[in-house]
Length: 251
Image (cartoon, rainbow, N blue to C red; front, side):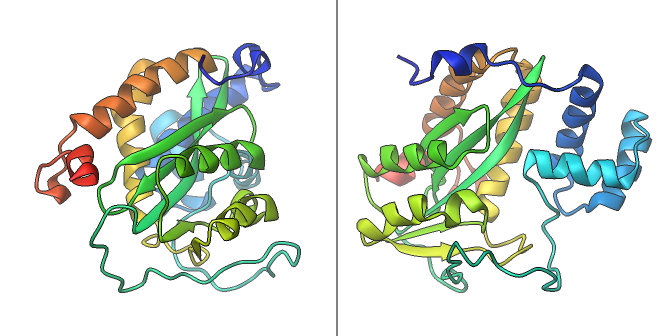
């Protein structure tokens, strides 16, 4: 009924309790300061949590969480030649209607004895969460399932994402191309290219995840189901003239 596999419900990540504590603290700091690189994160962990680890360990844990500082960087790496990266289409574009632009992203969710990942598809005009899904790993398939689920409800003109391997994969982009949806991707390190999803993560974590401290994936699913219902139907947004996402999305 929850569209979760039995393995997901009973999954226990292979991570030491001490490292899990560091991961949870790092998630707090990054959610608050997403523009911090590994150096600043290292010192903030020391100042705020009394966690003393080297910069290399911070970088390793950032890779595990799938995060990076969102500030403009020089091009120091080459693109994965196996996966096509698409240009960013939204610069200076007026977003004037629902389903004009959807965006997607993944974030880390801490649990009492492990962690999981959350992916969402968000309508930019209304901030309405179209669909979401949880996974114990950063696999492409859970992102693709979430996209297919969203497309049973509506279809956007443009789909925007970052350049993560899940979203540049042929499995994912193939679904978009098959539905004749324009593909847009953030520039590397561009903090404003997917700003509405970044704001959503802050809301989800400060208003639900950090308050509830979920123990299992199944418990997280049940809690987030209630939160996203509240977020879409009852939470009024200042940027929407204090209307709810559902009011803006459904008109």
